[in-house]
Amino acid sequence: MGKSFEQYQKQKLISSYFSVMLSIALVLFLLGILGLLVINTKKMADHFKEQITISVFLKDEAKESEVDQLQKTLLQAEHTKAAIYVSKEEAAKQHSEEIGEDFQDFLGYNPLKNSIDVQLKAAFVTPEQIEEIAQNLSAKTYVEEVSYDKPLVGLLSENVKRISFWILVASGVFTFIAFLLINSSIRLSIYSKRFIIKTMQMVGATKGFIRRPFIWTNVKLGMLGALIATAVLAVVLYYLDKNFPELELFEDIEILAVLFGAIFITGILISLVCTFFATQRFLNLRTDELYY
Image (cartoon, rainbow, N blue to C red):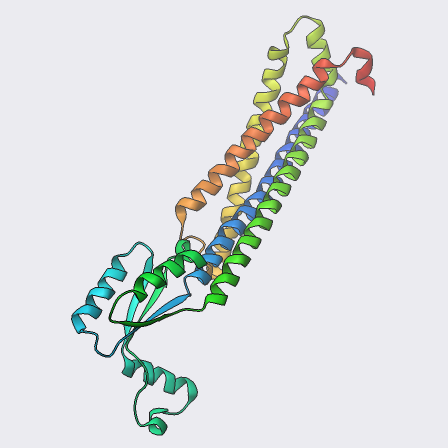
């Protein structure tokens, strides 16, 4: 009879530990998915920003050496992702292909200008910085005009700020919810051992001595939960990368490593903090309050 009860207690304990570990793993997995969303939202925003083109139209009398020097200077600049020279002949050919007919047959000449199309790095695509770059280029004597889509730049910057703000808010809310869910699981686990805690306290054990095994046990569960969450997240990433290679999910390995490390550390920290306060609560209760 005693052996059977002992086995029952052991199974109940294992079940309790398993439920805590599973809860931690599930919550951390959801946080990891949110982290991936944040990373890829930034990547997508950067992709759209880098499609913005500044067209530097050159005067017909611009010397070849001046054009070459300008292109080299632009390519070496920290804000430039690409600087492509487009001759007036190439521009005319592209325009004819777009409209489906050769406009030079009607005009009798090519009105287009030689130009350099400049694509900026995402960090420099703001209305203020693009305007400053455009003014610097316009100041050159052999530059006819500098053109870019101002309304599009302003709209893109505004939308990126708005989306980033709401993603930040969502991240904060989900992190808080994750803390509450993990805290509830750990508190329920410790609640079942409240009489053991009080018995140890009554025979003279210090609060630190009583807390230590609970903290260490739940930290280990947090670590296991975090490992499970990262493993499942890695499988999901692999599946998505295989089926949607255009997402380039494994392009930034360092960022993914930081994300996985953050999940692991979050699992440990939340388990530690929640266990500390849960055990402290039962340590501070009177004996008659344990029944409520």
